Each structure stands twice: as C-alpha cells, then as structure tokens.
Length: 475
Image 1 (cartoon, helix red, strand yellow):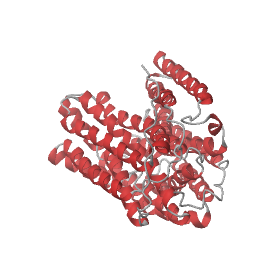
Image 2 (cartoon, helix red, strand yellow):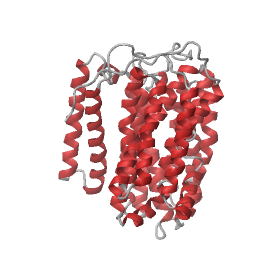
Image 3 (cartoon, rainbow, N blue to C red):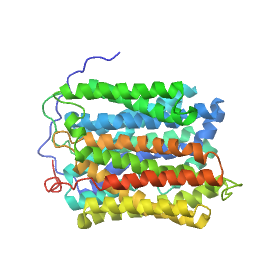
C-alpha cells in the first residue's frame, strides 16, 4: 500500500569555506563509486554456476541474482537522480552507497538463495551512482574537463577491460563466491569515505517543493511490469496470458504516472519534459541503440561463436577472450578519447559518429556472419564506436540536455533506459538466435541492424546543447 509522500529532507547546507576539489581528485573519487557498482555487476557473472551449486538451485532461480540487480538499477536511476535535486548530490551518493553496503552484507551472510536475491536487489540501487556522478562532474568542472571526465567514467560502464569478470571467476574458484562481496564491501567503504571528504555539497537544483514519491511509485511499477513483459513475452510468447497481463500492467502504470505528473507541483518527471525533444530523443536513442548493439555483442555473437555445428565452435572462455574482451579493452581507451573530442567536434557530432559507425559494424557482422574474423573485427570496432563514442556522448548529453529545474531527471531516466534497451534487444532476437541455425543467426543479426538503424535516425533529432549548458561549473 502506498503511503502519502513525506516532506523532503532539509536542504544540505553548503559551507562557503570548502574549496572546490581538484578535477583529478574529483574524477578519481567518483570513479571509485562507479567501480563499486560495476564490479558488483561483472564479477558476480562467472560465479553464478557456483551459486547454483551451493544453494542447490536451478538456472532459472539463479538468474534472479542478476535480473533483480539490474531491475533495481532501472528503478533507482530516475528516482535517485530526481531526489538528489532536493537532497543534494553528495547526500544522494552516500545514501546509494549505504544501501548497496547493506545489500552486500546481506549477500555475505545469506543462508538461502531468496535472501541473496534480496541483497542483490539492494545492491542494484547503486546503479544510480552513474547518473549522480555525471551531474556532480557537470556542476564542478568546465566544459572541456567535463567531456573528458564523462569518457573516463563511461570507460568502465561495460567492465574493467574484461578483466573484472576473469578475476571474479578466479576468486570464486579459490575462495568461494562470497569473497567477491567482501571485496566489493571494502571498495564501497573506501568510495563512501572519499565522497564524503571530496565531493562538494553543491547547490540544490530545487529549493522549493518536495520529492514526488507517488510518481516514483507509479514509475517503479511501470518499469517492473515493462521488464517482466519483455522477458515473459520472449520466453512464453507475446500473446501468452502472462505476457498480456504484464503488458496491461505496463500501460496502466504509465497512464497513472502520466495523469499524476500533470497535476504535481514538483513532479518526478514533468509531462512537458517528456514531450520535449531534449528528453524523448535521448531516451529513445539509448533504448534503440542498446537493443540493437547489446543483442549483437552479448547474445547473438556469443551463441554463434560457441555453436559447434553452425557457428565457430569455440569454448566459452575462448569465445569471451576473442569476442568480449577486445571491445571492453578498446573501450577503456576510446571513451576518454571521445570525451576529449567532444570539446573540439561537439557532443552531437560525437553521438552521430558513434551511432552511424555502430550501425556500420552491425551491418558488417550481419553480412559476414559466416566469417569468424570479420565478426571479430566488427565487434572489436564496436569497442571504439559503441563503448567509446556512443556511451560517452549519450551520457554527457543526458546531463547537458536535462531540464534546468530538474537537473537529475534526464540522467536518471536515461540510466534506466540502458537496462530496458538491453532486455528488449535480447527478447527480439532470442527466438531466432536460439534456433542455432545459419538462418536463425542471420535473422537475429539483421533484426539488430534494423533496430540500430532506427537508433541512428532518432539520433539525428537530438538537439544540440544550449550555450548556457556548455558553460560548465554550475555549482
């Protein structure tokens, strides 16, 4: 049962004596917070079979360890991004890390799988640290440094050059899966102390009004129903009773959210903002690009490379080494470079280069799906144009194009769009790639090409940031 919204916490006082942090110190501090989330996401993946064995659970039950983590991330992004407008960025960051620490302790001590899943849900709230970090950078750095810093944070958005998953596997084999959570807990503590000391309180984006908790509740229901509609529709058919039920819930929740936001004085996301080109084009570009490219890199190519009959017949670790690690490693260097280029070529040009070349890579993979080296080259190139150019540009633009009266709304909403797009892309191609035939892989890849082409077309509608938003140092 929903409770009436409570008044916002008192505004965080800003000490005029506290100097602004040095750019490098601020970036490193926020990077620690981002890594706390990212290692939680990537290091646990190779531990999933061990978790299933230890709890005597099947694959579908173990899958909740990751699905609940990412679902919580999709929910927390828009809510924490907007709440930080009232609460203050530093307090919001510390709150997010505090919830993650509590979830990590729960995972460390979990006697059963359901309790572990509950802990993972709490850990997933830390996904909001990305959006909050981007906003902090925008409010404290000039335009040139902002672009580079966004690139640095975006570089770890897909993992630490692929080595984090490898280390997670080694730790699981040597010390058990709980050792991963112990490392994450230590990093979270270091990140929290660093943020408390380094990150300025900053000015509040919204000094009046209060947090829209009813809107947050309806948006959460919408995102949950949408997530289950996509996964259920892919597994049981889009016309199944369960899929239709979740589809109806998705529509109903969004309708309630839309109607409520029109009447709110301080809405979670104002209706006129949802209709703005600044907002919907960014969100649509993110969803469509993730749906197209994520499905290629992390699903279709993975199945194709390990198929001994109609694919390349590689083992799981060779497949990861050839088709996952290069793109992640290249992205570590390409993302900061893309951020540096934004101050010279502009954010919009960087975005369009990223989406256009990602589309070209997708087409190459589909055209030469029977050639392992061509596919390898196409996926590796995505490390430059998707992991580097696209992720840097879209994350930066989500901050630069966010409404001035709700600076945290678009970065949070855009963060939620990553999970939505990724799950949608896999759901679209799974019925075809799952056939494990030459034709099935081809259809799956061309579906991804079509979705990525739509992403490129929408990216052409994303407006350029205004001169005021590019001036930087907003605090």
